[in-house]
Image 1 (cartoon, rainbow, N blue to C red):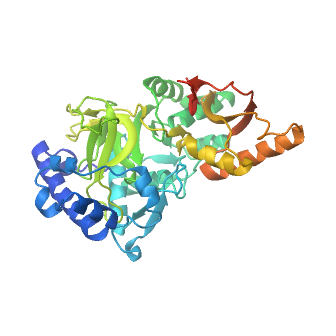
Image 2: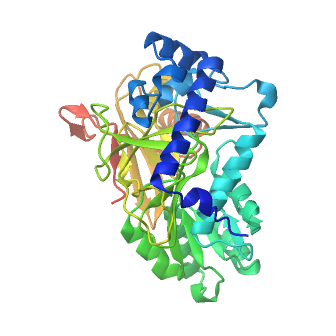
Image 3: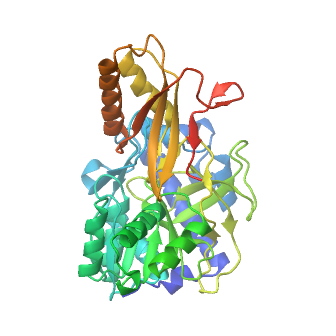
Length: 433
């Protein structure tokens, strides 16, 4: 059945904030007792959760948690329960020195499946639907997160995972898929391939597309809707917080409902760290309120958005967030994968013995994103022999693919030809329009 938890999703603001305060106090006490990283921070501030947290704004006294903090805790240092109580482990995409590892207890998994089910239900999914999940299954949270939420509703799940577009379309036809879960760019890739194959999209059973994994625009939403004859909703999640299910659109399509009974959200100025008012755009910061295995306090997501406090016609009273507009850090998102340009330079340096001048370039061909790595030719880094150059480029491509999980195109360019900004080579150039 669709998951409509009216008591939680439609409670008054006063009731919600009281629930958040109680859960926040419990979470801070848990990390103070069980996570040395947070205990040391609290002690350095002389902050005692049981005495010093009397209202929600008191959390602003605490420092932020960053992706680097989580990476440096690899693998289990920030877990708040013994490993024997952890029944699932995921890790995030990205190119930090270490992956960002997240654990879940049985209770965490129950909550996760429920909040994903809430968002899928808000997007129109029922027990009568056949939902095709094209997100990756494995250590990333996208595939399994959506999968268990759909099963919680009672929908039939097709775990097709990523790639093999023609096979995806055949499954869509044969199994009469009614809901597609994908990145917005991959939904358009599917639309292109359907057109190439001469298939009439009106003959498909599709009703809804639920998108996540990358920034996108209203124009992309309209194109997916017009070409596949569906209604498209947005979904937001981040592995370090939970995975998919942190926020999601209802069929009103006017912002993503935050699951505020499980997450406390702030928006800050990314330069100063100052809290911004609702409606102002800044960096989203999230504190978990019910996570047992891996609670995080004031986690800087790097994602830019606004909090939308106005009521939604659907009846849900929790605040919404706007579509994610982009990033405020040096993370580049390609095909739903977070990439840090500086870490690519580390790999190139290991291969060639010196750090070359390079640039990451994102391109798009018929809605399919590609990552190119342009490397300036130098006498020390590249030899004149064409065969040796080609071998080195192949090694670079293989090493980077193994590191980030997608295959780049590595290209040699003339010295001094890379785009500069303020006299320095730009780490990333986005040519996707």
